Amino acid sequence: MVVLSVPAEVSVILLDIEGTTTPIAFVKDILFPYIKENVKEYLQIHWEEEECQQDVSLLRKQAEEDSHLIGAVPIPAASENGADDAQQTIQAVVDNVCWQMSLDRKTTALKQLQGHMWRAAFTAGRVKADLLTVTLIPRLDTKWRVRVIERLQTALGAQPATSCF
Image (cartoon, rainbow, N blue to C red):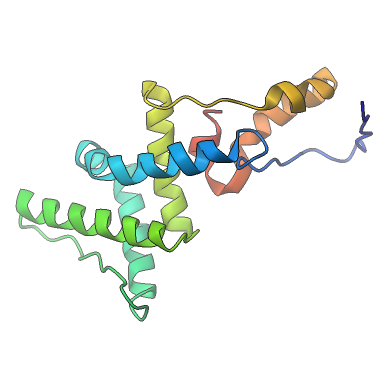
């Protein structure tokens, strides 16, 4: 067994989700398809919530920045035209998310929405992860094990999702 000596001034050990705390196949075969298959339903359910509107706003800003890219999908600004307008905007967001994912983009806007969706999925029990912590975390002393578990939330900028692991 390898023993790691951690200097006292180190307060964080950052682990990447993909392949470190869960099998890489879980991310590729479960988490990413979950987004594509459920983004429309998630938006419809959470549309009126502030967090969802912040996600949409960030995605809209990203779409504006991407407007010069081939195949970019715009997200129209919200208007006061009621439910039909909301459904059109939701579909534009769905199309934009799928476009970004098809290009394997890692934009903050996309990661934020994915994180919120994964958090909701984990909380509802719709997604469950197989952790590799059995081989990683027990090798640390108790103080560091607790810190590592607490700090997993910060991995990949997808805080809401990683806190579910």
